[in-house]
Image (cartoon, rainbow, N blue to C red; front, side, top):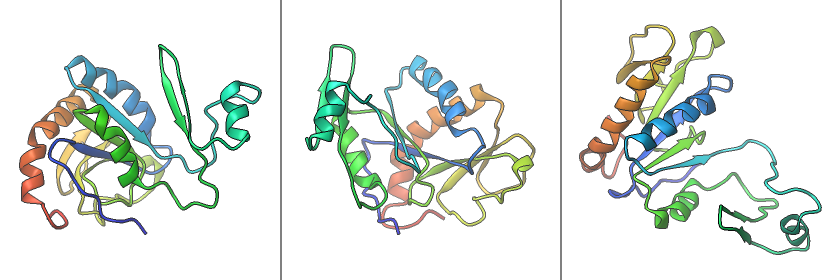
Length: 189
């Protein structure tokens, strides 16, 4: 089970929640440049349900990680990557990941996946996938973006109107402090 998050006034959060195949990453690929173009510094935390590699066998970082370095931080002028093994560990702890990005002072943290965690979310929904709406059971969902008209709680957005979604997200960042005060200490209504 997930734990509570300590939501911070200086770290607006928005989860992107959807069933597999709905297009979370595709939407973020389009949305992040739009938000950046609007002047927002955006961090993304993405959950992966499987093992993944960020370095290549035979490369120095991989060799050092396989030798037992934990964590290993590799950096160049262009990028850096922090890698650590979590053998036998449970699912990633979103609270820890948020603490890791906090010193970078993003103006918005978009969280892809982690749909069971208690954080404000934008649900993406495609009726053609024949999956239930999450908004029915998740009080943290603030809006639903769908490719078909829906009558549901919260704001309704057109999943194919990226400009409207970007505008809604920008408005969410502006509303964050007052939303946080209104929902301090409990689930949203």
